[in-house]
Length: 328
Ligand code: SAM
Ligand code: DTB
Ligand code: SF4
Image (cartoon, rainbow, N blue to C red; front, side, top):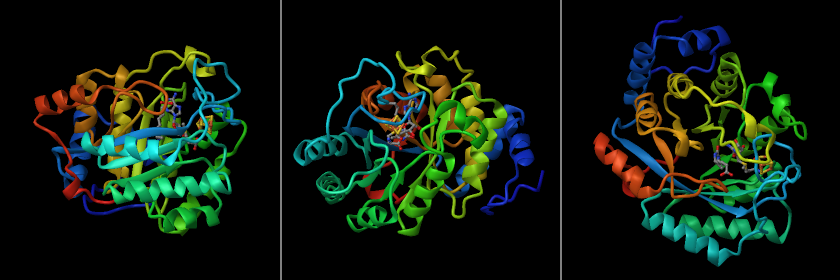
């Protein structure tokens, strides 16, 4: 392994080096992750983000983990695109609760053209006017749509690679890895910050997790935001019967992401409801510095804010206040 240079941001990671990092003894792995973390981030603050599903269910894609896919029979009420007022009421509530980033998710294969897209642009302007970062995840985008989102003031666009290129076809058949990379390139081209990560616990190997991290870490610049989701097993989806995941692997994934992409926000995203306080603490030690707040992610449960606040209090940590928020 090359010498550890705390201030170097590298884009030339290779898979052997990443695997060697991932497999370090946990004390050494976390120590290294902490060293990188402290070079760029506060060791005691996490960013609170809030999620809202602005368009729910009925999605034509077949992502095997997703309760919103029309291919599967899940216990979910579909909902068309929310109206502007209701969305901004939710954004304001999230802001009051201490969130500094508001993420709006839509179960679309690709962002639509026309009135619905215009409404999303209004939502973004509204969220920005509350002083929060605005993030959207609307499926695939053209460069023209990305430019319109940028003009509306969108801070970040979330579009995940989900897993390794090799494992990807086991999970999704209706769009390709390359499609995803193209949307990410459109987002990058118009200067919107990139939020891109994946899901672990879907039956992939350690090598696949390392390959996902490699795909993220060879991007130049790195995605400013890297959400690591633990699969939420939802009844009716093909991955419901996936066996329970060893959560120490979650810690390894977080720490490796932090070492590979030291400046990025590493977000401990979906799946916290099934993680103990102790594993979440290890994730923070490994360099995770953001969580979703509020009792719902898009369609699945998330710990309540008072529980998260209690955990942060016990750890002597805090949510990052809005005034010191950086844009990532
Ligand atoms: N339809 C858009 C898309 O896929 O780009 C946006 C919404 S989609 C729900 C956003 C992300 O949520 C997915 O890329 C996936 O990584 C994550 N996700 C969806 N279902 C999940 C689950 N059951 N467990 C963990 N993460 C999940
Ligand atoms: C991301 O990587 N995780 C968030 C956000 N991007 C949009 C979504 C998690 C969704 C979990 C399943 C659900 O609640 O529907
Ligand atoms: Fe549709 Fe996104 Fe769910 Fe895939 S992850 S089925 S694209 S909503």
